[in-house]
Image 1: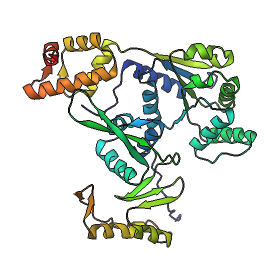
Image 2 (image 1 turned 30 degrees about the vertical axis):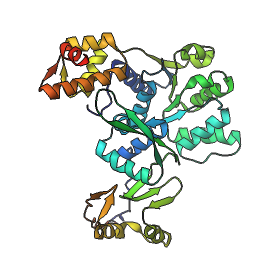
Image 3 (image 1 turned 120 degrees about the horizontal axis):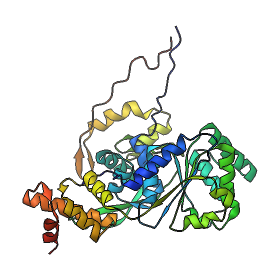
Image 4 (image 1 turned 30 degrees about the horizontal axis):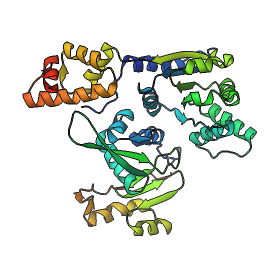
Length: 156
Length: 227
């Protein structure tokens, strides 16, 4: 029998990759622009974008009045253009940038854990579920931690 | 309003041209030019296509030299640029031969004054066969016509113009959540054939329909709302 190889499934042209491409090329943009041009669901881009804003990649530069309907649209601009690869959101408030290999997290314990050589993924969801997390004052429901897949690292 | 990218006739033209460009015969040159007045959605269309496909989008700058452009291309392709300009060119060619990707050069008018830069792009195209798409402003075709060898290689030239009535109909059908009657479309086309104005009218039509529980909005409704 041939040995099973550990394959890292490289997902190509994901929603967030497209959004990152468009963000880099556009100057000022609103989330509506991003959702339509990058062809990505509004909810998905909302979650990703919130994390990018918190990590300081994106800054709100103003608001735009939209004629014909009430309210404003927030206008953003990418201020930390680190490279062509999109930053990976590993948790609600935890980001990894493959362009420069840097991590960003809301609590410094996480970064210490990563710096100590620990793998942040298995312990993160449990930790997150113990405390109620609030983002911009609103409580957020977290998904249950993923069970490790069987037979992924097996080599026979 | 649905948050989708509306496909007008110009977008369809562009998509058809891109498909031909990617699946072209090897003897056909793979360069194309996309130009038109500002505000018609050229860059946005190109960006939409780049996001869907495996393209590279490069926005040129007025001060750009050949080295800067090559550095930009190499770093967009995902490697750190080399120091010497000959190495840089070789690196760029190697990467494109290994992994062919369409290159989109935005604001190509900026490069038109410098023959060295623009002919470098032609060199890259000739050595690798990578498709190039130049995006320029209103007079871009005339500016690039000076470079005969380059202009000869444009197999697709697309001009973006004002929206026609079927375009307005297509935008409304794809983006608006209520139906609009034919007279309303005609009114929209006659009064404002810019995309931003149509967006305003669509928001207005939606609020009218919501307030009056209408299924279709006509010109009379739109005019009534204006007063």
